Length: 317
Image (cartoon, rainbow, N blue to C red; front, side):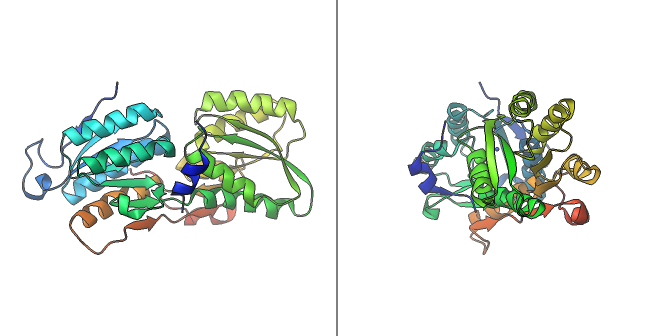
């Protein structure tokens, strides 16, 4: 689903049958004191490494905060996401934390939560009207893309270069990432291919194989997450295109190692740990009328071989 113009205006990124799982904080469901004072429903958007690490961070911080958390996964399906929201509402949680599968889905999610009197806290993206939500832990996804494009601009200099894009799933965070990347490319860089890898390594490898066959003189590739980037690297290397430089997104331990050994030229550290922990801390704080930021901007860092030690921890241990 492509992002509509209306949806683009309505959201900014300053920024990827369900079973509910109860994570008890304390001994089982009974708990004591603060354990029962706050319950959070976390609706996760997908099954990538980012989503797994985000859930670990939410669950870990909820335990630290003495809050009970229920989790559900929407598996990149907007209909499942709304169903998960409804299931959480039926549990009468204190607040919902949502990593949406698709920004177009948020309108219905927020309306459903508001009608039920349950505040909603967003991760990665926010709305243009902050009155609609409890708060958000926002990743400037356009900036993420622009940081990778800036590295290409600096590396290429004044030389004309050809660039390929392996996007994620259309209509979600990928549109913002790719938009920021394309907007920040220098005039000397020509995008010769732009296809979705659907945040799926196998799909991304197929896309990359076709891309390099059609564009054997490719200079750079922007890949919307590191899981796909490893598959893209494999496809390029198998085609004899080891000189194509890859820039990507996440900052996982594996991704940093790939930057160190030259598989990737750069990645943008976008810590799932920081996002998840911030979401729980601030959601609980806002529920308690504490003085915390309603909209929290998650720090970003372009990581290259020269500053690997500065990268934040990506995933809780």
